[in-house]
Length: 435
Ligand SMILES: [Zn+2]
Image (cartoon, rainbow, N blue to C red):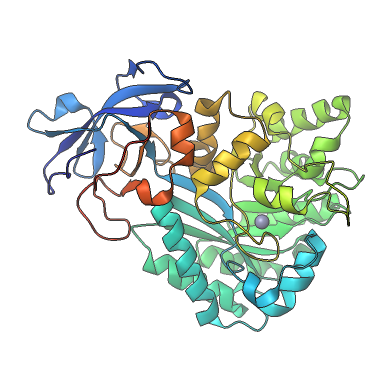
């Protein structure tokens, strides 16, 4: 149990707090005393002054807050959600459980919603993410027409303003890749740039012609836009489009700005082909988003048969080659995934067992913290570093098992050192510590 935090601007030190060593920079640490499932966790003292982390030794007059029994994480970075589709299952029904079924179910309904409809649901979703400890979020918004002609695009711009200072939100204008070949493509890029957004594309299962990919990346380059793809979200026996994308990135030199989500099909490649594909993906600098919930729900669905292929990208092999891997939520309570929530820590727990990451959690926690923060352009975020903003998530836990199962209501979210994410409180409320 922790006592209330001192009133600002009083500096304080979180004493004996547990942290993943992979996220700790230039702070001294001590080994954790015993207990199972603590690999990669250490004890440290984190000073907080003027909204930033600093060394306890720099704060001789600071109040010491005993924080033993809590894990501190940087606020989490959510790299892939669809706020425009969020919580619509009650309106549309569930579809047939396939990707094409979901597109057919949700698509027509989306045309009937106005800005208010989008904004109300987006606000609820962002509140939920904020409470769960997310501080940075990238959301796709369907924009087959130009973004500024879509109510969803206007709604997310409103939500971005409303949450400024509490949640950094970036919209992705999502359309089929072939939008790159029509007249309005340059206007699309210009509108995305105007909103501070990201240029998104869905690459269909029959792949992508090199000239279309090149045209898309060249358009992005004209406006210095980051790009974000839905790619290989299927298990068909076709050439992997992730590979074509990597080749296009190398060919155009547009490296370091590409996030590719799903990449399910890669997991079915024979070993030799997979080795070659992953070497090229690593060379291209593409970051890969794995989205366990939607993949497990949509992939290999057949009537009256248990799925045999789980449709997950080979992230362990990619990570071993240095490919940046992010773990993200994707859809929440819509026709693409009728369940779930915006608790990224619980998505991480799902990924841990679905992808067998549980023996290297200290490494993989980076996939919801500093790796996506960097991909999303938040160079200060995702790390516990001296001088970084004191944007923290405190969870009552003494090991990974307790950390990954603590419900959001037990967590404390600190923004610039203050507990003000939702309720505006200035205290860490007493919570039972999970043993
Ligand atoms: Zn998606």
